[in-house]
Amino acid sequence: MLGAITVNEKSKPMEASQYSFQETIVASSKVNWRIEDIIGGDKKLDFSKRFMPESLARVNDLDFLNDDEKRILNQIRGHAYLSIFGLAEEFILPFVLDHVRPSLDENDYRVRAFLQFAGEEAKHIQLFKEFSKDFKANFRSECKVIGPPAEIAKTVLAHSSLGVALAILHIEWMTQRHYIDSIRVDEGLDPQFKSLLKHHWLEEAQHAKLDTIMVEELVRTADAETLEKGIDDYLSIGGILDSGVKQQAALDLEAFEEATGRTLSSDERAEFVEKQHQANRWTYLGTGMTHPRFLETLSRIDPEYRGRIESVALNFC
Image (tube, rainbow, N blue to C red; front, top):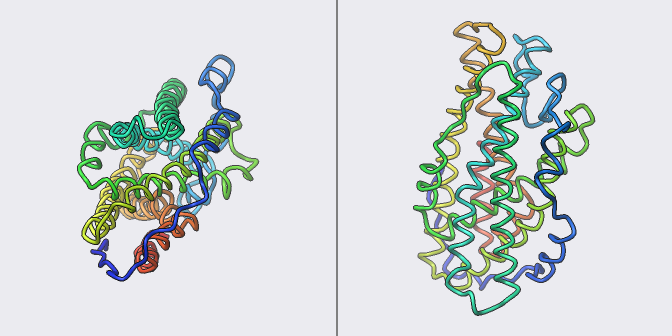
């Protein structure tokens, strides 16, 4: 259960990270890519291969599925994965723009870095839409995704700035962990899908640094009540995501049965949703909440926060 967080009134001011706006601008320019270079034309998805690493998909836990069915479910999970990232970028983009807008004349590197951040998020949204078109054109059934994006964005952005910034930081580091720990080393994945995830990661690596700076900026001017509200709101957003990925597990079951023509028994359906919900919890919640860099930022705000978030994260592993 996502509980309230209490503030340590004696906590010291947050120390700044070593990241800089100028360095992220330089790094981003080196890895910049165009959508046309990585999707479209002869660059097609290979539906004979898996899209997601098993450490995230966890389809092998479903013993009542054969190998072909597990591959199909893995691909459904891959579609949901990029679609959910697309949903997240729908609230990240306006949040970054709103954060930089009030101080456009203070630091030129800061403005450029955050606007580049926003522009790359817009590019990612478009990339994921192009992927969805390719997927739908070649997959054997409709794969529904939670939404609509505008409503999810509205719900998330209704929370405090610090709460949203922490949720975004969670997502950015989560992306890094997925690619580096699981995707990059899995030689059995479809090369095209792997390429999409690699290019997404290349730019998100800089976004994680910029969002760390953003959190620091918000914490620097926050009083104890604002900090408490920020942590509570981060956990509230996590609760919203948890409900959403449980619903996504049910939608993936629907897509799986349609794609395979197989109707699972009631016991199999219950096990499917339970295990895939927990797989989603690890993918979208546990991997972010336990990322060392995310926990490091929490520690620099107040070490008590780190311990409490680590305790909550046990539910999502």
